[in-house]
Length: 158
Image (tube, rainbow, N blue to C red):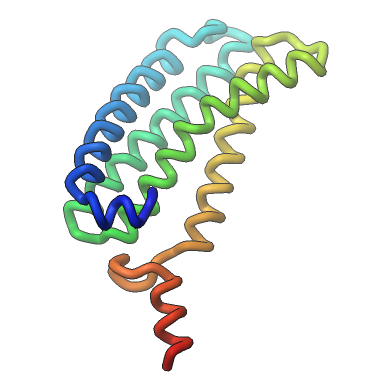
């Protein structure tokens, strides 16, 4: 996600990207299986909310990483970047969910089974919205080889 590092050390970018995608796919598959087959709170009652959030966001992470790989192989770098941002945002949502869960447990007198799934939905939606906002602010025109700042500076010079 650091353009200067990516430009100067493309091999490192590719290697770290492959490691990141492999770890992300493994985590998303595991999360999907846990969410769909054996959620922490059980599938009955309060565990259903947590199970569906876990399975849903895991599936979106898998889809995002798959689309990122598809686009980079097709040399659509801008779209690759956007899908990687989406996948990263959702994986980061897990950490945010834990912080939100801790805060809600401290402030509210609600059972953890209810808060767990609810905080997961909240963090996932928040991170997806933030990712889409960031993508819209920094979307690269054309093939994705240039950044908006490059286009703007060239237009200002003309």
